[in-house]
Image 1: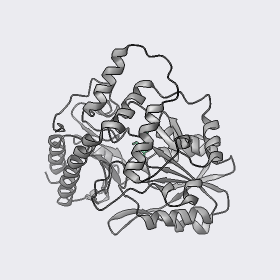
Image 2 (image 1 turned 90 degrees about the vertical axis):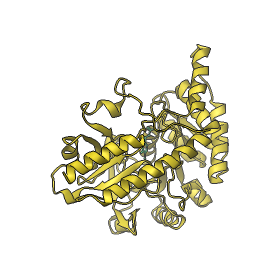
Image 3 (image 1 turned 120 degrees about the horizontal axis):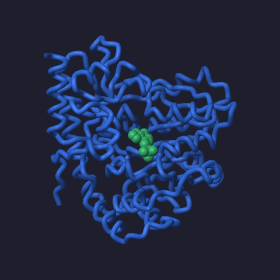
Length: 378
Ligand SMILES: Cc1ncc(COP(=O)(O)O)c(C=O)c1O
């Protein structure tokens, strides 16, 4: 079956956060959703569920749980038990729960210095301190430098927040790198919360996603893994996510922290997420091929433009672009004035960067590249 990723779909009147942020003459390429229609199997499942017409409370989402167990086994050889799963309405709520469940008022978490903003915000919201580990560009990959923190550690650190694949850097961590993170966590007695929401979006054929918890029994017992089909199948507006927590005590604390606060997961979200994992494989394969072209096209274009630098992300549909060569105070504002709506690097901890979302039809990307060229070369 072929899927049409070329179609340009009008989104401005669909209450889209992405398309409503900037004025109409700016191409929005920021927040992490894609401009593609979701997989037909998801749309069919939603139609069927909507046609049923009764939308009462849902119970234990058995079909979703079964599909998660099957997906993790088939994709990552991760054989989980259904009871390890906690179904949650979003990965960000999961990050916030982990922060509150596993750090006390006098304790702190560790997060990458350059990272998806809710990693930092979760600590601020909980009024907890946080240490930031530098993200360094080494051999063409953005890598986390945890040892840089060692000298400052004072025993108040309890939780290590990881993001693999990394947003915004696009890095897919290798086994040895993850093992180094595990050794660091064991040495400092840290619980690890690993956000792996982008794991099904690996673009580099030589890279393989390794769930942190699969490294060893030790890793499984000290970790919370957060995942969701929402990025891959473009159903971010239908929040159905999950945490995998093999350790019963950690699971108990995580669940207790959200009790009575987190809503049940919406039944249409469950319908969409279940269909994605059950029948969305071919659509995902086709999507990855399309995104690889977009990534390569953008990287090639950026390499010819003055003032910009990027490494091709190994995963995600997000490019982390160093705009320091432009010599402007605020690159995001500068680009917005030239018709390009990127994510501000400042939100991720690096004001001289912008993040470009290339999850869009190739013709939209071409338009963006033309605007980039006009802005930078004239
Ligand atoms: C690393 C990461 N975690 C979580 C999220 C969002 O998760 P959710 O929409 O399920 O709260 C995103 C969205 O861009 C992300 O990049």
